[in-house]
Length: 158
Image (cartoon, rainbow, N blue to C red; front, side, top):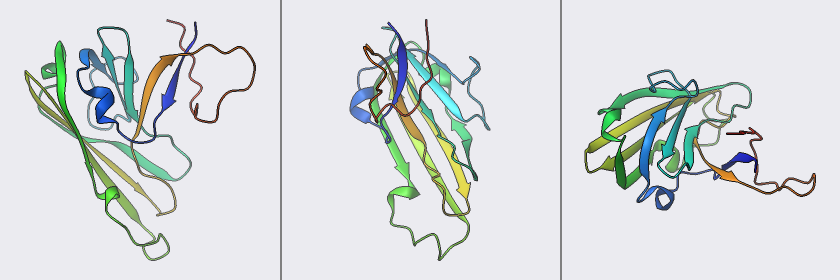
């Protein structure tokens, strides 16, 4: 059965609570580092979720810093997940500020410790700078119409 990434648009802490992490990688299968634009978390049950950015045109969004040891996530269960961002604060309309920036912190806590991923996004103020949250799910497609909420069509046959 094919698997696709389903974007949820915003970070969903209830999806993560109790999630047992098997691995944490970037889009190339390596340990995430500053400058990466995707983090993939795989659970022991085969379920995956990722933090990434859906690029449109003229914006830049990537990991600015990682505080803590990623090894504190691997082999442990998440019992606290939090998103903090200046995007959650009302900002002036883009026309008032031609340059825009958004920082977003993702804080994950396991029984082994805390890890914090700090993302930084910038644009001319017109394009989104948010970090997207997606879950990889198995779906049955019995016709060619794909629901609107399936934004990313990355087919994975693993």
